[in-house]
Image (cartoon, rainbow, N blue to C red; front, side, top):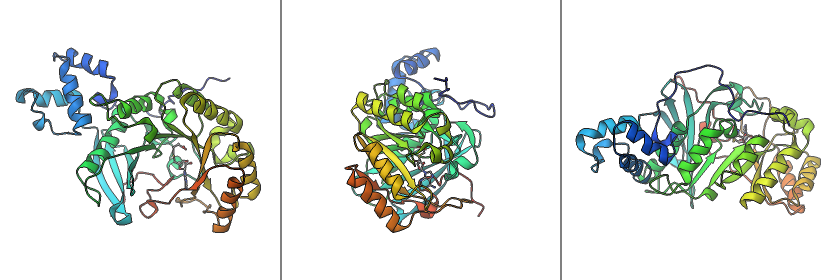
Length: 369
Ligand code: SAH
């Protein structure tokens, strides 16, 4: 098989983001303390403040001598992301945050409160190199990979907003994390895996959130899926399939010219066997493009003996796109056909559409007022 890199070259060489404790493993964090003339346990103290208490105010780190706090914070928790704007909808239950990174690059994350959970949808790259024609993020191409620190900061900020009671309904706990914001997570493999460890490691080394509540969504980078299943993390995998036939998928998801439907499903099956996790198939329903009953039939046949769940996403509008969501009756027929094969299927809600915060709408531009 042709070798495909898991970290794609960035188009422009930039000044690197400052290093943050979230970029390192717990052992490396302790080594970093020692390199800076500090006892190793300072790293554990800062990790406790960061991951357990979600604190970004060194003045409250009272187990660290007052005259050392700002130096310790500079070494371990430099500011990586700055909130530019917040837009809300659904009576405040959905909130899209626009973040500016150290080099002025913009990314977005979306926080959603449901009756039984709070989910944050985070970005792993600024822009995206996968170029799917129906997705707003893909249209501007890839700006750069985010570091593990920059990805983790979006999650910690969301967790902090929850405990601070910033969402209506009062104090909450961040329960779910989905890598479904800007970017292709498996094209920024190392930073994403470091982030997954930050999420799942128990306090104080990480946030202690169960891997089953974490979903990595991919266009289907087979080598990335194969590598991820060996990490021992066992998060949920979602594959953006969008059509069961290679002919159409070559244009809807251009990386299909490298990894065909059969190979992608085989990799997802292997992931499921190794991790015990049922995977999701994401399928944006596009009117008269991929919503015909014969395609539902083909998808049903492909999935009927697999441990997969189909998530249908009514196409969200994106600027300049000529495509639109399927008719209600076509959507219903698509669901009916899949169910006739015994394939579990749900239709995803369109949360955040009004604020361009729904699937495929994240483009991270500062709106002119
Ligand atoms: N690159 C990863 C992560 C993005 S996840 C991936 O493709 O899986 C965002 C999900 O929303 C993907 O399934 C993507 O295909 C889907 N999506 C993109 N544009 C969309 C749109 N306009 N309407 C509905 N879903 C869309």
